[in-house]
Amino acid sequence: MILPLLVPLMLGMIEYGHYFWVTVTATEAAKVGLAKAVAQNGTTPAANCLDLRVTNPLASNGIDAVGNDAALQYFRDNAPTLTSYATANTTCVTTGNGYALTNPSWQIIVKMDFPPVIGYRLPWFHASSTLSGGITYSTPALIRTR
Image (tube, rainbow, N blue to C red; front, side):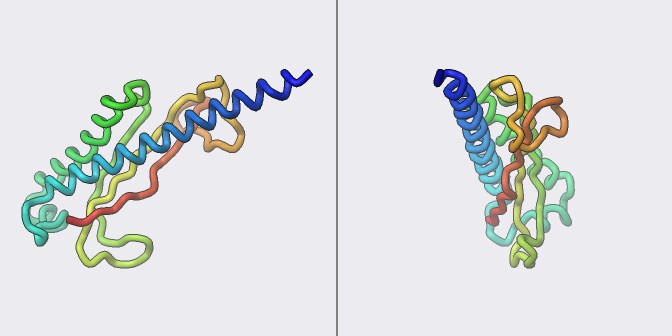
């Protein structure tokens, strides 16, 4: 008699656990990618991302790619099943949360479009933009200066 109530509850718990594991993994991947991009941003505090963009746009694009690659490498190392669902975007920004940053900084956002574990998306999860019946998650914008 309790089984019809217990099974959906258990499936919901499994799906929530998977969702939170994905969000923690994506956030950690964003932190790793951002740290790598900042580390590649030069050896002095005065060397920031906009300085690189102005003096050598190709070097800046390379640093953007370093951040993206580091985030995706984190997925390959720690969550190989999620690697194909992740995209990373590292950019140089001059404003954050509506105010100007004193030093232009690196920002990274990791977006996940992944299938649900239980076979269908729970109604309160965001619908995936690329996967039919999938779930989407984007990390909060992480910003770091050197």
